[in-house]
Length: 398
Image 1 (cartoon, one colour):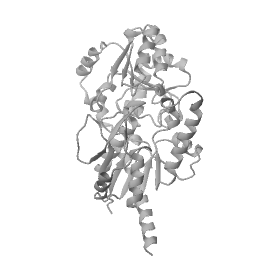
Image 2 (cartoon, one colour):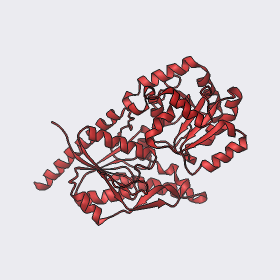
Image 3 (spheres, one colour):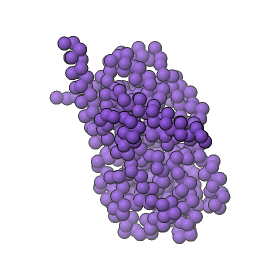
Image 4 (cartoon, rainbow, N blue to C red):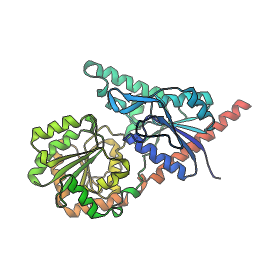
């Protein structure tokens, strides 16, 4: 029997914003549509986009502490009536604030089951809203909000065991499903890109085709620990003098990192490329000879999976969220101490045999993280939730 549902995805983060939540939500939407479901995105307005079919946007303003992010109103009678006409079977929330709250209000008013994906461990981000002696109370508040939001949902999805363990530590006592966000492998395949065009793009950043490139793609933010990567470049340059660090992305920490680069005297070896459209990200992966990340705040780290799909080796600081994704010296490299990063990067760049072996193993093993598998796993959760919802409705009738 075919399973077809009307699904409303409620999220504060959506295109043209750039974040892991945006990527995950867009991939989920596309996969659910592929499986035959009807999907409507309920999100915030954005000055760079106009109305689009299948997307309902609530009025919003930039978040004053983080202007690249937007905060929507938590209720609109007009939008409520519009959603009522959709006759939704499932509400799937992706964030816990503004639009996430609106999703819960809609679900309660219209008696629709709620599935929630918990993406963000807010205790890792409280430095944006608090400091000093207020850090601990703010962290406790973030944990309490997370627990309360997740407590009464019909199902909870998290991307990794790390996040599941964190929610249990917050005091959440309920079943949680671990479903890694999938990657649409196709846009990242090396065979999609012309080598000459990639080299021409490199030249636009002052990088010639013989220079090894250490690549980072993502938000330029404090919690991403990009300073660890930049600091490692001083030693790496001594070993490989012509290597370059290419940073693709933008964010609140860029100015501080540019100052650090000048302080270290490595301006000629570090390129800040700025934020790039999601549709073009695939080609930027092809500019790297090794992809690196040093953050310990990721709930999954989608960029590592994207780099694997793009067939470039990955180097990451060990974190529990990478268990089962990166296997040291098999499909990538892992470092535990910041001072070891330069040595590992140089080994990956110099040892071509190990480099090629890791790339092959990573690409061959990417299937469990495919977007197709992701969509199918989430669909199974919907089926179970709808089954439980029907049983409850029948009990009310009898």
